[in-house]
Length: 177
Image 1 (tube, helix red, strand yellow):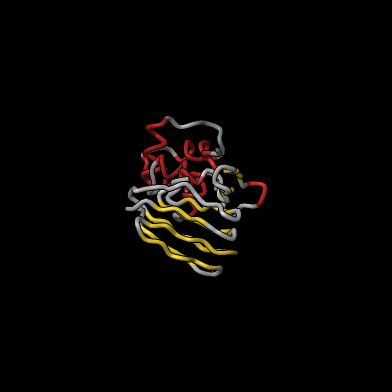
Image 2 (cartoon, rainbow, N blue to C red):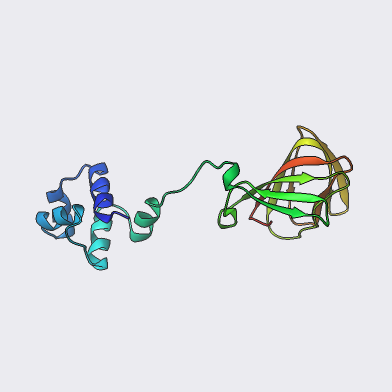
């Protein structure tokens, strides 16, 4: 990470000159200039002072500069075959377990299904792309066809089965697969 460039960018976003930032942080203009050009490195304490003057903190500064992938393609997906249940689970957002929700593409073979999950605190949403599924939710069941959706709280055991085969986008929050 280019700390100097990050500080310069924040300073410019805030409409401050090097001299104004230096005054606020009780540093010299020359020191700010050297930091921005990566000619010197500030101590952690000094970096915290500079960032405070720029309206941010260490955590936000460093996380804001992470390259975060927002578009994913076939090469990013991870596939797991569940031969026992006649299903394949495809994680379509890599490392989604660190996010608030986890989308997967679920392909059920004819007569296939998912393993029962729950109960736990959370929610699940599904969209049937093709075929049809039976949603088992506690003691209830519901047929969900192509183009239809389901939404459940995960306070009961739930799972899907399909007599004909199906493809479903399933999103759980928190991640559960």
